[in-house]
Image (cartoon, rainbow, N blue to C red; front, side):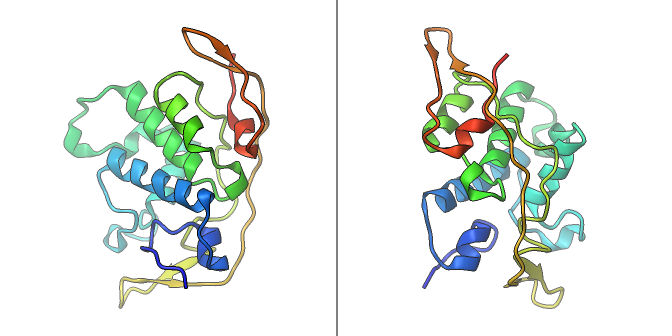
Length: 183
């Protein structure tokens, strides 16, 4: 039996009933987005378009306005590059295709500015929660599992990562390494 909190449970863990390294990375990504956005993973009171944090941030990312998701209680007093990086890493970790998610080592490198941001698709085909895996009942305000599946977009590897001290090629240990790009 798989136990987990709605909103943090990866789609594949919800449908297969098994936790994995990738599902842990997914949960980390949700927490990263919660920190940056200052809201819960699932907020039924926000209206249908904004209930699911991950879907809402993906939508803003797709139109080039990811910073609009920042916690309004910060009153704009934050380093835009850092918070944007945190949100993009959060999206990367919550990629609907579990094989496209990073390893935590890659997350740390990107968050420390030792590696470039991943090259993510502008939109996910399918939804993390609302139409593919969960539905929210307006009466119960609790997500119910659904059994529909979803597909996602893929990205390609475009180069090597580098830091100010050395240049390191990303080994394609994980397919998510292909999301990193450098110029």
